[in-house]
Length: 247
Image (cartoon, rainbow, N blue to C red; front, top):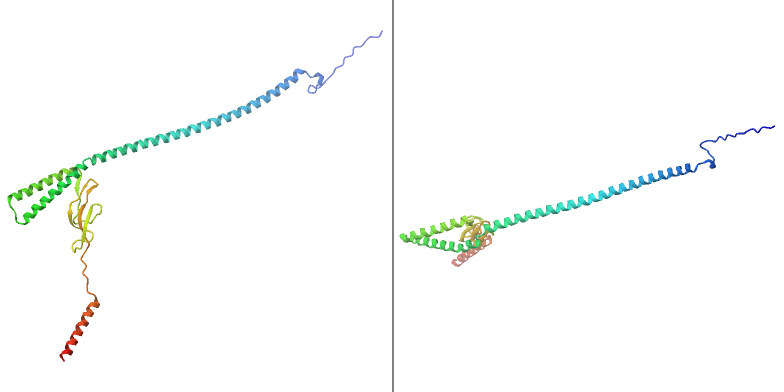
């Protein structure tokens, strides 16, 4: 009786090289999933980098905009502060000027009074020169001079001063030239005489002084040489004529 022998066949395959029919579908899905996962991570990382760069640019733009706005606002505030300071100084200067010249109209109105006192003193001085030395005239003259001095002192405390004239150079800003004349004693351009006193309030001229200005030394014209020679010739001719007539 023939016995059936059992035959066993062993199939040895390389683990890395499996036949297609032996590849498990789960393994394929795992590999695909790994590749997809890797691609997704790379994409996400790239997108994150882009987002980071975007966010950084936006932050820089916002920071620059804020910086510009801050600088502009700071400059505006500085200008406003400077303008306010200048306005304050200008107001203070105007107020000081107004206070300084507050009595200008009153002082200008008193200048004719000073002129009248000056004329009275001059008239009394002329009488004294005429040997009118009575006690009444002397007392009156001294009284007028005292009143003039007191008035000038009060006005000086308020800033009024007389303008120097005689003996000094002519100043067109302070003096009014009535006329000019030649003088051997006073240099050219200097004031010889004052007709009317001038006054100024602080730095402002209220009235210029009327003066006479020197034109310098008097020029003496010398006779010309031709005239002298002509006179000598005429004299010689006259002498010769006289001799001929005598003969």
